[in-house]
Length: 161
Length: 220
Image: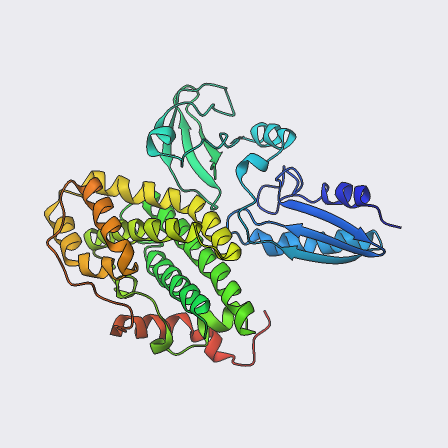
């Protein structure tokens, strides 16, 4: 008999397909898990809508649930429920340890260029806040590129959305 | 076809086609950062199109790919503004980018208030990502907005920009444009949806080529 906590534990072992240091549970994309008999229903909410990792996540979730002996039903929920504020504290620490500055908390209003141009984003390598925006966009939809003036290393910032 | 599906297809077609146009700078933008920026924006816009097509497809009993690729060019509802092909004209690209993103801000803002929860939810999610497109477009206006080539492109595309949004949102669009530019283009007749430019047909030929080459579906 599969329990919800078995499912959560199994999902927590699935790495994000594009940033494998963090699990999809830490990323906050698992919205709900419901077990009824052998059926395991999982609601997943995409991060960025054009992110191709979603299909890989769905397949990985199905495989893990089948390995537990459950019948997976994965539903992609296209509402507004995911934001970078859903990334767990542990997830933020893992991002930082691997050279990604974690996203700033969402403010009341939308992000502005002035906010992005401030040095407030700490360098994940040396901790300095003397950093600058290189490019709002990066190699995947969720990342921006920054440069640390102190240790002279580029780094990636998880965009706040 | 319901009004809801009509509206979703207008939006989805705009996002798909503008995404395609943005992607035409991949590899050839004026410098590397812009290559990355336009490619990433293209990916987002096509992602928005997919979500909107999926919502429309669930009403129509079809799927997103069929809506994106299996219609004839004259069945697309995208606004003329997004149909225009500008490569290698950077000034017109910057002008269209700013006009489209501003029009999209106004339109998505209105849809977030929709009484239809699925539409309002998708609009809110799209809006979070669009914030970065807007910042990017405005950054280019800060850099080049006073250049004669950009200014004349903004004036020339003003009627097309008005055609992106519904009539009741056009005043707000004009206010926003003026607030950012510090000047307003001369009054122009809105260029409404429904027109299909030859550029759209050429884009469609390329965009649907693989799909048409394997009508029964291909396995990779």
